Image (tube, rainbow, N blue to C red):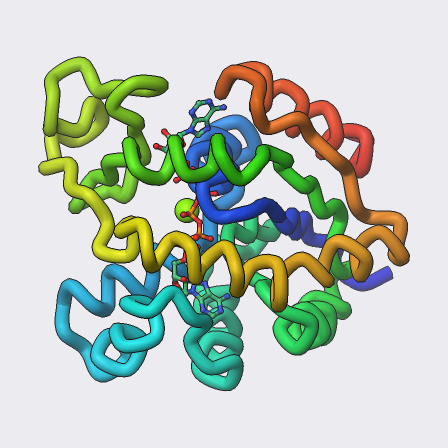
Length: 222
Ligand code: AP5
Ligand code: MG
């Protein structure tokens, strides 16, 4: 039998808590978080060619072209820390990316489980407008729901907390539109494969984490 790896695909609207949960799952499962949004933001900050290309799309809240994104993920998955699998946060994000991801992961048993973190749009807006992100490690906070110990400073590495450029109200509205048009079809895609698991994302961060760990363990008995 070929080598098996654990690929987990986190689904949910912008602001559902994918990044928050992926960071916690990294520690709980010992698998790396692969956030395409974080990789693009890193490139943007360092003004690489990829960053310059991604900027115009991200500023509008549109998706970066598939060929660029898919190649970037393929390269990332070849890094040594991905030897046991990965927690996918923000990829795949449309049906073309999902088919490409199936192809990439097929030799290792494919996607194990696709948890959908569900929250309504009003809560999404509340979460996104209060979000603060660490400039250096990418840890995610909320000024009311999950504040850092010292305002503006990351608990983990002391990095500066900032508000994301694409968290302006108009851009958030377009991100939600893009989600419903392009990403929501993935719910049916993974449901048809028997991999979708719905999680109530309005619970506390800890409760969502426990629910996620339960569905992941169930998908992959120890
Ligand atoms: P990306 O960075 O992926 O953004 P997103 O999908 O819009 O998701 P968010 O990061 O906004 O939300 P999240 O679910 O991670 O929530 P979080 O944990 O932060 O993408 C950005 C852009 O990059 C895209 O628009 C696109 O241009 C490009 N891109 C990325 N991937 C791409 C791809 N595959 N293809 C093409 N383009 C791509 O939580 C939100 C807030 O809520 C935080 O403040 C948090 O503290 C709080 N919170 C979380 N959980 C709870 C809880 N249970 N209770 C209370 N508060 C909570
Ligand atoms: Mg995120």
